[in-house]
Amino acid sequence: MGKISLFILFMGILAGADTDFQLARVKYRGGGDWYNDPDVLPNLAAELRKRAGVAVAPDQAVVDVGSREIFNYPFLYLTGHGNIRLTEDEAKNLREYLENGGFLYADDDYGMDESFRREIKKVFPDRELVELPFDHPIYHLFYDFPKGLPKIHEHRPGPPHGYGIFIGDRMVVYYTYNTNISDGWTPNHNDPPEKREAAFKMGINIVLYSLTY
Image (cartoon, rainbow, N blue to C red):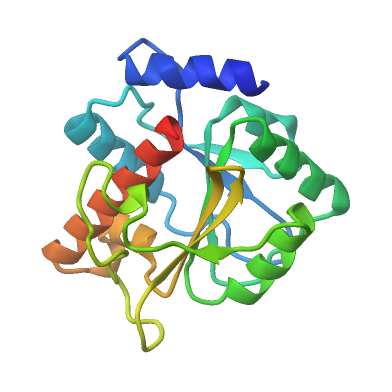
């Protein structure tokens, strides 16, 4: 699916059309647990339908980062605790996807920071992860986060950080570090209600941003 097809799909989603829009989880090599907490995307999808009226499928897709199937999904989610490894062909495939309208959200689940930064450099050797200011639209699109990312889990001391990679004015990669937003989308970690609420609100902002910018 090319840029024009992705744009048409996005407009159908926002117009409430009957679409096949589905959140997709990225499967990668290297030994990291890309598969952990399999309920997070279905739970986020349920909140997107309920709160924002987005026509999103209730289940998640799982796609290999090197497969052309990624072009069928406007939103990719990547997480894990360990190592990520991309081949040259996989990095090329992901770059083409992102250059043609796709969006990648990566959430460090404590332990993937070093490898994610190394491998995303294979995808965009000419671009840097830049920290987003608190006035960036992703923090204000549907719910307001005047101080940026909420911190869901205390993996490390210090504040959470949100980074982006841009093509022109469009952010194509959003990476959250030292917050673990997606852990708040599952009840498995026994987070207090206010943490889970903040996590869902930020998750909705992230998906809506990917569809409208």
